Length: 295
Figure (cartoon, rainbow, N blue to C red):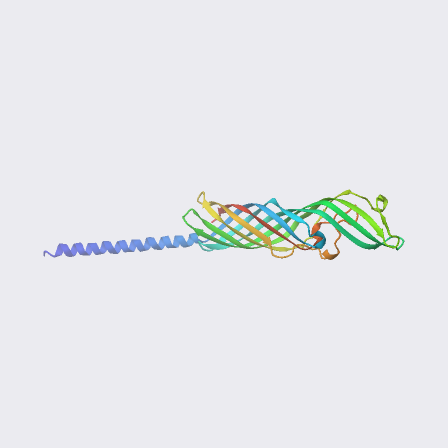
């Protein structure tokens, strides 16, 4: 009879332990299911990217002394991201990517064998100095990016996006200026004709020209962003990162760089890209992101 209270207490203790185990298991299962539901997310975002951009022109020998400089540009995009786990997903969207560069050439000299209206051969000579050019290109871009993120707390973490962008040119302009002298040399008479404006032979003429660059209809760019992201609300996240992108191949449509003439006459000043065997873009800068978690 003395053992009966002990047996009752033991049974009650065992029952309490079993109930605790049951409720802990049920709670863990619910938390696990909730966590699984929270792993996948659909996110819409806005990106702004101020960058130092450049258009690299791989020039021919007549432009070998050319120098180039970076220009500040701003690109932007609307982005849709799907996270299929806590750590990875894919991003796509539509954006506007801008690139610009400044080119300068201290001196230029070229000549060509031509025939005049009376079918006489002569050598047309062009000399230039203080030549500058500004190239501007913008693309409609569609990114296809692999999205990785590395949480360090429930609000903050690091992220990386890498992949390619399909780019279609929207604007492709250049503006040039320089000082040129045009002469004609007739070897058969051993005479140089100059300062005859009616024949386009002028000295120290300032030539200005605005035109369009010839670009391929579609180009591909490599793009990578590494940065830090932080939740400022339950569904709103901001991010800042370092971005680098560049074209994967030649964006230029010019095909006859070996026959290039920078300024054949005082009415025309061709782009230096036309005298290049290859043109490519690159940009280095920051990307600011604002993301909203739809679900």
